[in-house]
Each structure stands twice: as C-alpha cells, then as structure tokens.
Length: 352
Ligand SMILES: Nc1nc2c(ncn2[C@@H]2O[C@H](COP(=O)(O)OP(=O)(O)OP(=O)(O)O)[C@@H](O)[C@H]2O)c(=O)[nH]1
Ligand SMILES: [Mg+2]
Ligand SMILES: [Zn+2]
Image (cartoon, rainbow, N blue to C red; front, side, top):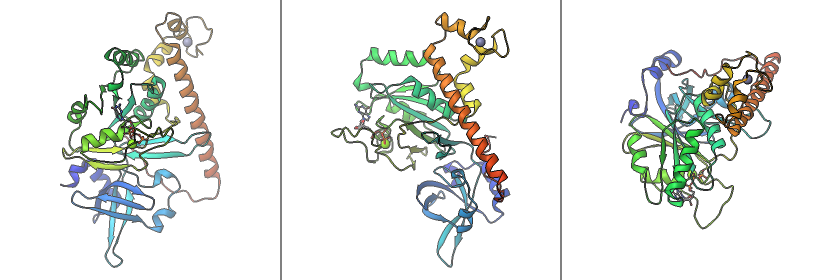
C-alpha cells in the first residue's frame, strides 16, 4: 500500500511542497487519543506527538490534527519519536457546535468524501434531525447517503412511508434501507464504497453504525448490548479510520445527542433550496414572509405545497446559525483587539 491508497492526491502534495519544505514526509491521521496521534504512511502504522512549539501556536480546536487529516511529520532519530509539524489544508471538515449557548465546536473528522447518515427507520426516525445532519454535511460539500437502519423492525409499507416522507421534504439524496439483522442492504453499502475514498458514519446513538461497520469490516468493535437499554449512553467514544479490504476507508463516529448548527448560509440554502427559490419569487425583495401581499411562501403553505413544519425547521436552523455567526464574529473582534499576537490559522480550503 502507498500514500495514494490512503487518498493522497496532487492537491495535498502541492500543499505539502509549499508548506513543509522539500524533505517532508507525509502521513494520514487514523486515530487520536489525547496527545497521541496514530498515523499511517501507506506502509506502516505508528504514532506521533505534537511538539511544544506546535501546541503553543494553536488557538482553536481547528488547529489540532483530527482523524482523516494529512500531516507533515518529522522523525527525531536521537530521541526516537515522531512529531507532527504541519496539518495540510482540509478539503472537507466535519464539525459540530457544542450544545448550548457556547460558540465552541467539536471537530469530528477531516477529508471525508461521503458521509453515511444513519437513522433507524423504526421509532427513532425524525425528519427534522435528518435536515440538521444534511445542513452540516452540505455546508462542506460532502456527499451524503442516507442509511435507514433496522428495517427488520418495520413492515414494508411503514418503510415506504418513511421514504416518502423524506422525498416530500425535498431530500433527493440516495437512500439505502438496511438491516444488520437480516443483512438486507449491506451489499449495496459495500458496493458503493470505492477504494481510496473516505467515508464516515454519522447519526444518533443506537442507530446501528458500529454494527454495520462490524459487518462491512469483518470486525468486532463494541456495540450496545441488546439487553441493556443504555439510554443516552454512547457506545462508540473514539473515532478511528478503518482501511477496508477493498481499499475504501471508513470512520465510525460516536452518535451525537444534540446537533447544534454552526453552518453558514451555504449549507442551509442548499438544504432548503425549495424555500429559498420560493422566497425569491415574492413580490417584495425584502419580504418577511409574514402578511405581505404577493408572498409566495405563505401562499405555498396555504396551498399545502410547502410543509409548515419544514418551513419552521428552516427558520429555527437559520436563527441558530445567525446567532452562532454573530457570537463568533464578536469573539473574533474581541481577540483581535486584545494584545495577543495574531497568527495565521490553518486555512480550510474548498475542494479544487
Ligand atoms: N433490530 C435491529 N437492531 C439493530 C440493527 N443494527 C443495530 N442494532 C442494535 O442496535 C443497538 C445499537 O447498535 P450500535 O451499532 O451500537 O449503534 P451505534 O449507532 O454505533 O451507537 P453509538 O456508538 O452509541 O453512536 C445494538 O443493540 C444493535 O444490536 C438492526 O439493523 N436491526
Ligand atoms: Mg457505535
Ligand atoms: Zn414572502
């Protein structure tokens, strides 16, 4: 195996040349355990640490390496350790806002090509939550694929209803219904995963993500035992990039209970494009979609062409995003005016 098999391409190589000097060595972060970073260089798995200089230069969680990152490393012969010197720009970066008012965010994974969003089609199914995941994934131009798990627990009619609900909400991404019990749908998941591409498993705790990974990777990572109800407990706590026998890479994520929105307009506009284009057709440019004449949104809701709940969810997510952007801007302003030295941040560059 070589670096290219881990997803390295000329985009990363060019950045490495520019940022790390000529004697660089590259590796991909496959797991993070506090201060220890498990890396893979295509041939071996080994671990590295951060130098004090690196840590001192960080000021945001985004400055730390996370699973999926490409990093330039340096081996220190005398002291027999490897350090991470530079994180290459990320093509994609999955983050989520921490619960509550706080503007802190949690980094989930970098350089993901496709995100599987797993939701049980049984009791737990919730279209509004699905919309939240899609906003997060769309924001970063990661391709989403929806997995409806536990089909063994519902009838074919009930499953068809769930799918039609998703389609009615204007979500046209690929949907794979599956069961880890009957193994229905698992081949479809296997077949769509291609070598050198990185996939991740997102979704609520208990959706069956790790059980699916175990099937696909022929592994036995801990899953929630059926006998314990374990409400609110997350079985998977660590993220790890698994290299499958087919050459595809998969990162299992711990389920998140609350998914705060920190996305900017891009992700929201894409997910709610139906509402955006209706709004553009309103008679007044600054229509608040309240009682103005010629409002296409209120008209569409009245005609049941636009679902009221879908619209409410859009308003809620938009409000949350605006509050986040404002709080973030205020924090930036504050730290700029303080006497702390300004340093360049890792640029989160868009694909190509
Ligand atoms: N009936 C049924 N049960 C399933 C299926 N998939 C998983 N389960 C069960 O659901 C429970 C949760 O599965 P996990 O794979 O641990 O769920 P997870 O999404 O990894 O959860 P977290 O790691 O907490 O995010 C376990 O008891 C599984 O046996 C399925 O397709 N059908
Ligand atoms: Mg799990
Ligand atoms: Zn309007």
